[in-house]
Length: 150
Image (cartoon, rainbow, N blue to C red; front, side, top):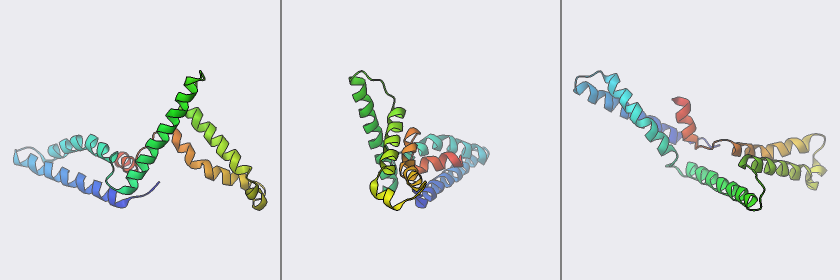
């Protein structure tokens, strides 16, 4: 996962400016500033989370594209299995890929020549670690930050 601090900073600027602007507008019509700030939060919540899935910065854009491509490939594998009458879930597809990736890394001859003891297994676990994330809801980094901060 990347850490695009500029994206987080832009998000915070938008939130603070919207809250202050709505608070100011609220006081102008004789209401407490907090009322405007709450309304701004209610309006911005879904909007900013929606914008987070349409990233502004290239690093996040690449991450979202990668997630979409992975989901498409997994769906194609599930559909191919369905077409031959074998039922399989996307989670099972991912688990099979993880198992086969781990097995391939452990059985690589070059690795066995240089790694001793449990080292091939540890290296295989590291190589397949990112594949475990495919089982979870994949969101952009900014989406995760927004939800964490909320």
